[in-house]
Amino acid sequence: MVENNTNFEELIEKQLDEETKNDIIPDIKFDLSVNPSDPSLELLTMKLDSNELIIPFYQRNFVWKIDQASRLIESFLMGLPVPQVFFYVNDEDNLEVIDGQQRILSVKYFLEGYFGEEDDQGKRKVFKLTGLSDTSSYNDKTFLELDPKDQRKIKNSTLRAINIRQISPIENNDCVFYIFQRLNTGGTQLKPQEIRNAVYRGNIVSVLQNLNLNPDWLKILGFKKPHKNQKDIEIILRLFGLFNNWSSYERPMIKFLNLTMKNNRSFDSPKAKLFVDRFPKVCRVIVNNIINPFRPKGVINTAILEAVFVALLEQDNIDDSYLLTKYENLLKIEEFMNNTVGPTADNAVLKARIEAAKKILA
Image (cartoon, rainbow, N blue to C red; front, side, top):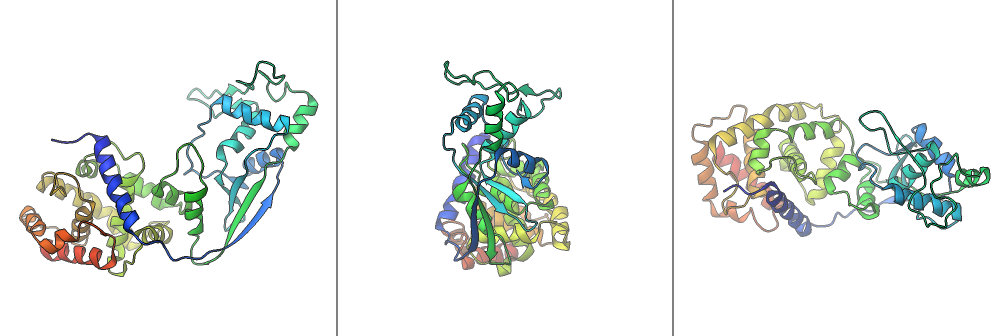
């Protein structure tokens, strides 16, 4: 019986999270330049409008309610402290918001006079301060309805910002990944693949998302729709990374995936194009020949999936005449099955698993 989408999501997420727990922590040391600044709210809004301050596409949408945004504005008007924000100084010397998106956009919207972005009809809600105490003189006022003195106070109020620039290592900007993991304080934490989309944005993000919509792929995973935390996309990234160069794989897996994203942002290399061509074909072959694949114990095993996919992706022409028999024979190999549980991201374990799959499925 097929489980519902939520159960499959939880099973796959649990497997990948367990693997991460068993993985070693990257032995990386960063040299960072960390400088505080106190830009005015008016300046922050101007920088947003001129794209000198960037809220990248990977960030979650604006989710604050108007009451939350109103209380923030009231804090500035009352001279109360507001939590600092964090910016990453990128290679173009622009600032990317790491933490503080909701606060910054709340300020921008209030100064503009409208709350949130346009709806489907192209309309925006007037931003009147809402949900304040009954005695507050600011209740139900827009920015333009404030006294000139209060308008100036809002525009000239400052927000402490911590500006982070990576000095070394120069070959990658992995520090941003780890900063996101530790500093992102939104109501819903960004997950690893969402953070990668943030740090290593490029054509690879949309390509992986499109591949993830393949109906056969979703059927293999047991999903009716893509995984809410992008664990399915993370698996596709793993498949590409290993297809690209599994023989040079070195743990930790998290670093391997980060480098795969970083080094393939444009996703236009010969191997990348070959992967885009072959991935849906492999999905189709598996769906057509194997019932409930990669579930020797009733639940999906991503280590088996990974080995079989990589073995088939490397074949120029897949002969599926005996694929089911070969697959069943693979699952009968004790050493192979031992390598699909426990520390599955270990160098030797992962490589032995793929080598066995390549040999049997050839």
